[in-house]
Image (tube, rainbow, N blue to C red):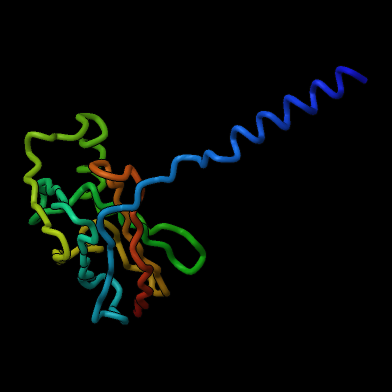
Length: 170
């Protein structure tokens, strides 16, 4: 019985000490990601690009990194693009993007090639995100697209955009 009372007292003491403490709260991401498009319906195999608005909602300058794309224009490899058909399947990568991603895995991030772009507090940077530079949208159907990026500079939180739905027709 005395062991039980001792145990109860220990639990109550621990609870009272912990009562005033709250677990550390994760930092809020310093920016939001918003996708938009005028291309709600596209033909299979045609070019699909979305506008990505990156809004700095913090009180400090935000770093937004770019990496040159070896194939066409520039692709921001820090942005992950999730594309799924109505069954939840991801379409195949383009050959060029698949090769670039495989090279990136083998070599690792080439930080010396990153060109930083800064976003001031309250400002919004808009960039084009080519979906068809990354994925083959050749099969008709509905596709959902969302982008996300790890904010490794401030919050260490995965920032996710809204989801856009496009319809691919024959």
